[in-house]
Image (cartoon, rainbow, N blue to C red; front, side):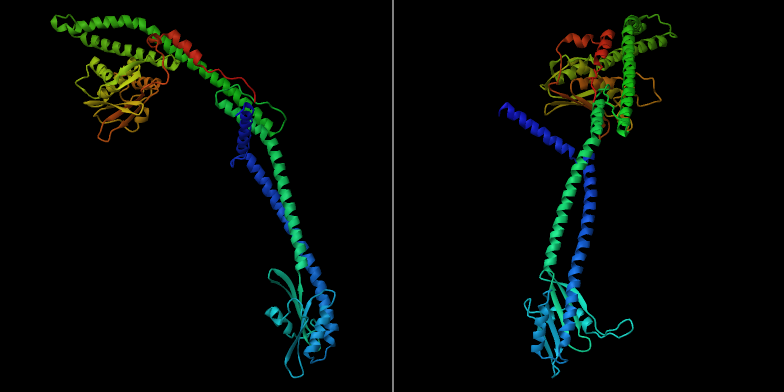
Length: 541
């Protein structure tokens, strides 16, 4: 395929996509077109229906009046001239004369001859007009003698009815000669009038279709004019949602849509200012935590050295130590709290690295079972932990960060769960799945959604505990930087289960060992925080 053809295909695909997106069933454009179309269709159909009905009645009434008037005159002039008891030949001859009138209808005359028998005389047109072609209700009305009054001067009247035979409309009429004589029936085809009415109906239908098409085109043009500012507003809102907070709309005119654009610009400006203020406060907070943690390192190092000396003195107290029994509890408290404060500072430094985006992976080929064994052995947990892991399950991971994750999960299970703690390792597709299960009471259901929150502690009555509330949060961040995940749940057999899933090959990593070791410097964290602020693209919609 040539480059020109490729460009044409892309253009056609884009145009088709634009048409379909503009005709979504939920789009305002389509609804406007449909509303305009329905209004135009209703108006056109109503007008066409009224016009067709009025013309139909006018055509049929005019034809009907002319035929009935001619038939009535023929009955008076020709049928009235027959003797009281005519013969069949006389009826036949008179019917033929009546049928030759200007309206060209078929005639059937019915009378009694001198012998008292009923005789018929027809014009013979239309395949033979017979009495059976006349509806019974019409014959009954024609034969019924009415009482003569001042309002009704004749005992018999002319009656008519419209019928359809083989999809062809007919006019049927009948009457009796006043003063005695034959009864006459007339049959007139209305097919020419029906054809005229059909032509009218087609014309009105075409006019309705044209009106509908014109209204649809008008609605499309109007929708394009009206919805263009709305479309621009949608694009601007999408850009605003993508973080481009400096997006603004061009405002023109003084209508409601222009007011909406001004309101959007004001809201976007206020949002940009508020987000900038929040980002500045967040950055200042991160700098404060990083600087505070960094500054605490130096005095904590000295204090830790002193507490280690005190701790050694406590251990050898039984061998001639000189601590006053009244001072010993205070010394032990200082030692434990100093260790806790040191852990808290280290955790805060680690959290600062994650928030600033300076945490890096230092990958190595790791035997997961050996790594777990080393973690448990280094912390003297071998007697309390059961390991169910085959050697030979390798993955490219950061050993230091994996050790942090395992130490937090296993330590948390030993501290808050119940022994024995069971650690199992399995391979699932391209993932390494590590499960840490304890045999304690489990995690309350209301606590499960918050176990990885920072500084969260399940018991509000024990705000002072050995942990800082950051361990599981740091473990989760370390899993995320590997492209993995940690979930917490309760086992059906009792106890809590933490499941760690790590890819065998993380999506992004850096092999510079110095990054992970020294990323906690306060100045570096602050600089990274500045760089992590996204740059908003400039533009106006």
